[in-house]
Length: 279
Image (cartoon, rainbow, N blue to C red):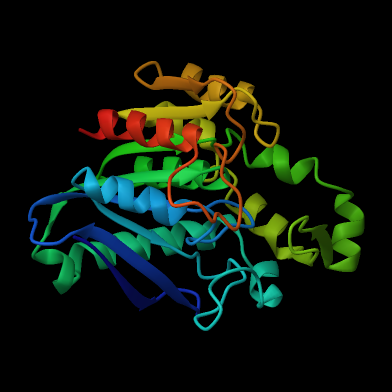
């Protein structure tokens, strides 16, 4: 039987982090996967829960969480009731959140009895593909990493997104969420934090220095993060593996809400490739 447990931990930035762990009952020594959602995402988006079940059935303890400033709350973890938090998010906060989750995983009494703390692996979707790449390069506890429709540069996204002078003058700019129709704020601190930490936040630098097994999965019909970004990641690390899924979009056929009881075909292919790589 598959078990799913919820946890709340304190992050480093005055906001809690909501976590869930999915695994098979009565199993021990399970390798750990920590999954990180992408931009305008959350841990229960679309088919992510079905994906967690699939990894659990394959013998993993699958952990996913909401970044502390993703715009969700403890009471409403789906969608974005806390736009003020969303506007105050940045890449270094997400790296800190992931570090907090890794530390928590390594000490949690519930997971201690079932998991193998020496086998921690990261999967990051979209923007979080960059987050997990940087974290894996700087944290020696990570054994393997998967970039799922992952970005290859944070800098290009910031420097080409609108008018920097106007952003600085206004202190905030807004991005429309096409699904929820919310105008989602980005405060200028986001850009300032990136410039301050630009070397650390170089995905190219991190990927070039990765010495652990590295899998890059990308759909060739992805219009949100183009396939060239996956090819860049692969080029920068000669030991990486690049797997392209024919016909797959940025979310591998899923959407939110996902009301079916099975994974979309392309996301099922993702899970199969990931399990083969991790095992």
